[in-house]
Image (tube, rainbow over all chains, first blue to last red; front, side):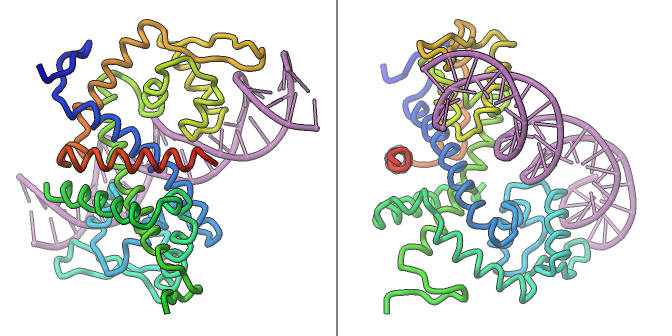
Length: 151
Length: 151
DNA sequence: TATTGTTATACTCTATAACTATA
DNA sequence: TATAGTTATAGAGTATAACAATA
């Protein structure tokens, strides 16, 4: 037969590799986050705020930002507060008066550029891969995001 | 010319993609961790402990475990305590009497099997990928880990 | 009734610093 | 002197629950 016996039951082929891939994604995600933090720290920006800033290329709903970052909306309220305190971003009213759009100030845009550059320069984990392999990886990750967002 | 101008300076080709890949790795890593947590929660195991258990296929030094998990050794002390409290693992003396090996008890091994099965089954993020693509991804991630461990 | 965002709060995760014991 | 592990503690990160306003 084509299945694998486990003490807990029977698993379809392909599932075991899924577990392996999950473990690797978590492990490498942690390392990537460490690199990312090291790139953002000199600019005085903690990781969650830096992640938000990079997503603010266009104005975006607080809720949409929460979804994109996989954060609870209540946490995004705090991030938006920090952006305003630092004059990096502001809330603007949407047409539906329940929603608030978040957008970067000129200072925020400038910081975002510096952040992008710093992150790209210090992406130690990724930088070791040969360019062609890096492109393959980007395509796979992009596919993964797209597949999940389709739900 | 072959370079890209940034407000902060000039960046070599390939670096920008590195930043993009870093961002994707963090984003997907978070989603993978959420799936992982959902798989471990029914077994009563928090994420950091679950990650440790999956790495304990063979007895391993506390320091080696810390490195593999990218945790500070002081944090691994706490994880080892939790394993012992739950009778899932124990510390055993090494030949060098400074080091302690961590190994799973029979209960720990049983739990590890169930954990592996549950994680594989509920790896929602990864499961959407076609098997061939999944294999490519695994190879790339494995390459990434190997490259970094070579330092 | 469902959705957006906010507040207050508490919990989980993780590192730092100072220490002990062994090498 | 350098390395493995521990202790105590503090800080960052994140979610939960209850709520207000709008749809």
